[in-house]
Image (tube, rainbow, N blue to C red; front, side):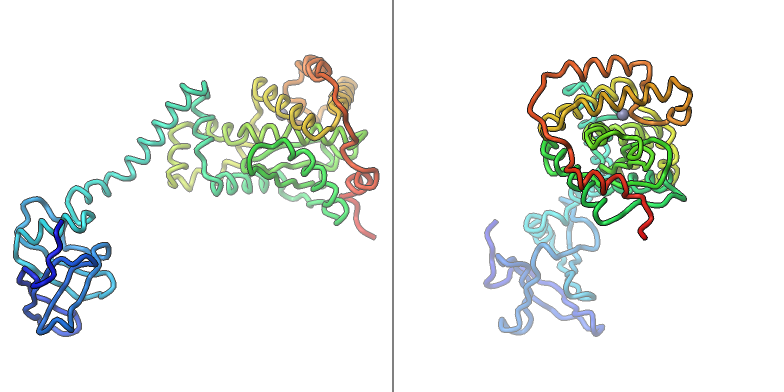
Length: 367
Ligand SMILES: [Zn+2]
């Protein structure tokens, strides 16, 4: 639009908001903003268009406009002129009725967009709707769900932490992370818990238990279990389980920032869920790739399966029923076969002997 600054074309009434007085002014459109001229040009005011507001949205048949300016609270400008109102709508489109309607519709647009992405994702990638919604979760939400799950699954248990043990855990995680796509990092916690267990929570958090570390015959076994849990994380299985558990509509609500009340029990809920066989197979596949990329032999993982299998058969393993890696128990033999069938590659132990010793004693009480 052509800007006419000299002379300003419209008559208006201006009030600075500090006194009740209003002044006759001339108003025009300058490239920098609305130009308001009182007695002389030296006192010109410029109100940038982006910071303007109007008493009501400007419609196409407005006959006047009452304008305020964000950076000068209380000040107002009234211009009783339809042409002015239309030019103002052109210079500051956010003031129009159309923009107001769009703003009002925004939350609905978001929902519609989420649903669209979802449907497209489901068809394009043959994902389940739950998996697609899980993929839409922002990191903040995944993290807070993860922290809640951690809290409810480890409540009353001590976190094991010695400096050397922590270094060993970080070294192991870093080696496996070679093959992890993108910027994904994992937060690993060891808890003082006799049960042999390992699990992944939303937000790429993984818990390993003292029982698991004590029973493992080598660092390679722990590497295999950790890689499997990373596989669950990368495939977003914990997030997907939550969506499935609370239902799609509640999950969309959670995504939209609502449903805060539902979140409270999710940790408890996830603690009781188990993954499908397909999810376990996916996690195994990722684990095999991570171990290959890290140059860690897969024998550790099969050794671990075999030993757990024996434990369970001997009746000593009742308490292992909740152990993630064994959840698809009847298939354990198949899984061992599948892992053993992998082509061999050059490998090095997952941890140096000193690191492995440090990991073994990470739950020991310091002298
Ligand atoms: Zn698993």
